[in-house]
Amino acid sequence: MKKTALSGPALFMYGTMILTAITAAVCFSIYYAGIIKASVILWVGITAFMILYHFGLRILAGEIAKHVPIDHNRRFYRRKSFEERLYKLLMVRKWKDKVLTFDPASYDFKNRTPHQLAVTMARSERDHWVNEVISLVSLAFILLWGCWPAFVITAILAMIFDGQFIVVQRYNRPIVMRLIERKEKKPGVNAPSVL
Image (tube, rainbow, N blue to C red):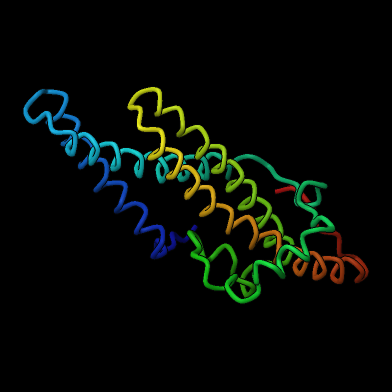
């Protein structure tokens, strides 16, 4: 199987994780060893650690989720009646194509069937719902370091960030589902719903 090059967003995430891991390790070592007990050192370390936490757990959860089958026909993935109005209000059509994609090849209409795209979109949506939970769990660090406003603000920002991807998947999936329905109406075509 041919190995594809990492996308710009993937390279950014991996590079940021390496940088924040080093920064957090250095700052925590300096602060907790008593070399420099300045609160700025601790907070730089905490900030770096939280960035590492958010990026690292998102990548880990995505890798694990690749091995979990998904059925894009489940009721959960169907658009609800209120969503059409919500997407117009959010003007999703204007910005949906500008959203970063971790693995652009998985959304390539030329090399993927509509069924594969629908499964990818459902899997991506599920991954971002898991990321919403990861953001909420980050609030537990308040118990360790205090300063709840910093952790609440970062959790909310992370949830908004992941929310955009959920919205885009839910906005686009009905288009792909219509393509699948058209294909299935052709005689002899019956695609599986679970991958």
